[in-house]
Image (spheres, rainbow, N blue to C red):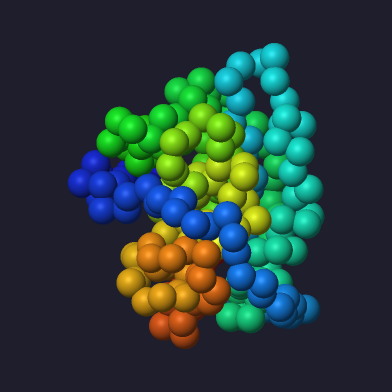
Length: 204
């Protein structure tokens, strides 16, 4: 059964501003062969109609998963594992505009029937369709614009999808201030993500 997210909870996880996230720090990758907490992730490409396919996004999925693991998650004993690569035809979500103040509600509503409860789903839409949003994070779902996949936007929204709130600490992944300085999660955040991943894997 899907998790039903009340509207007031959706509004507590606002979409995140781009600011200067286009100039990321260099982060030395750290990889683990067998991290303790393993999170299955589906990548879902949002399309406007059946005349398009996922090739329009030109994403190297293996490189993207390596980026997430090496730069952000493996160092905290968390492993992102590629699940399914899928498409979702949804003109409303594809054409999401971030000037209506209901972006998170739209994301929640338009994805209720397309994500699995035993994993996390990353939805991708074109950056060209938005004004300022780089991503949105909801329970077990993250929406990321294609131009910000290889930025700290990705772990930030995945953090939201795993239950982390914003933390106004410069340099922290969950910080909204100076996102170009975001580099790492703290130990408390990592422990909370591991706990949530464990619950997801148990089907809770």
